[in-house]
Length: 117
Image 1: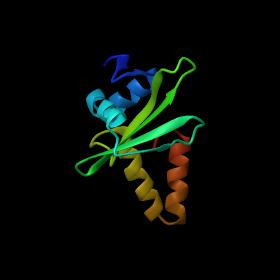
Image 2: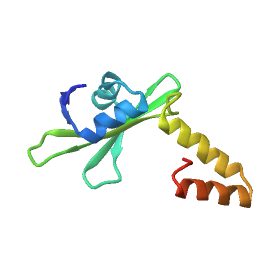
Image 3: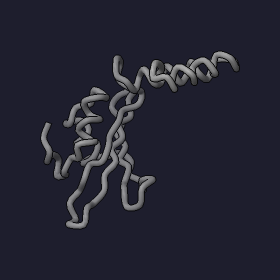
């Protein structure tokens, strides 16, 4: 992966997220350049770019630095790609939501011990 791509500088965090989430830099770069929707991000000055690829929605978070250059801060795909940590966390969250009181307590304990997601 390239540090500079699609007219932007990619942070280490964004490149790590691409690897972890099974996204290609090409798809994320296309989302940044040709977004279906762009809106203000949660962080001051950041912009969320969204683009649909089939049934998946790709999101890229970008912000201009003090030099006026675009920085890609993070990116993800929803629903998560099969086999990624995001998919495992989604399944764990759904199982937590369905669980009863003691099931939720057990999942919280496992997560605190670093065993669960």
